[in-house]
Image (cartoon, rainbow, N blue to C red):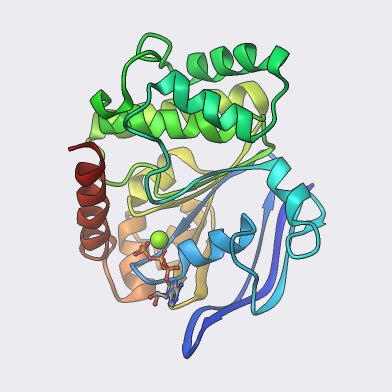
Length: 264
Ligand SMILES: Nc1ncnc2c1ncn2[C@@H]1O[C@H](COP(=O)(O)OP(=O)(O)OP(=O)(O)O)[C@@H](O)[C@H]1O
Ligand SMILES: [Mg+2]
């Protein structure tokens, strides 16, 4: 079953065409990576999918629901971890989750159970009563994942979940996502700058450049398409004339700065 269906998606901002005729679909249960250099249109695409932006043209259906016609119902079936920070440093992890549970109108009788459940999944039980500003980057990201899955969505959308994290923290984020997939069968849509992670943890990879899809397939298929490239990084360079690492640095710095400002 196709859980996400994007057809001919176009998103303009004035003269800028951020997304230029994008078509792809994601199967239920899949982990799908959307890759591309800075400004490729990844975040814009995701913002349309999670109903924060109304598309200029084209259509997007999630679980059969059109995102422009049924935004409220779409929001109920998905969870979203934005590129920018979404946890409050002046509250504890538990308090952040309680706020989200109330916003989501999770019935009072179910709240504690739901919060304990996600805290366990992301392995933050012991840190739950600490202020989030004392958390490491990986812990903050895991808390944000916990916030996004409190209502048990069938689709979890994450915009650069591991950017600016050290390898151990990145690993802890992917471990949490793996448990989520195994336990609930949650479908994942992840944007990333690290090709290695897409290859390790995702079933299929789409590469975007200037608002268009330039490749789509398993890591193995993409390498074969790019003339037997040894790594996904090579595929990326061949297809976009850019390198992910050089493209990624600015947004990483930007993200780190935001984090430091928020928690400093
Ligand atoms: N609200 C907006 N108004 C005007 N232009 C925008 C807006 N949002 C995005 N853009 C432009 O659309 C293009 C795609 O941006 P987008 O943020 O989707 O890229 P991205 O692939 O997520 O990049 P990054 O890797 O830096 O996060 C860029 O040229 C960007 O400047
Ligand atoms: Mg982005």
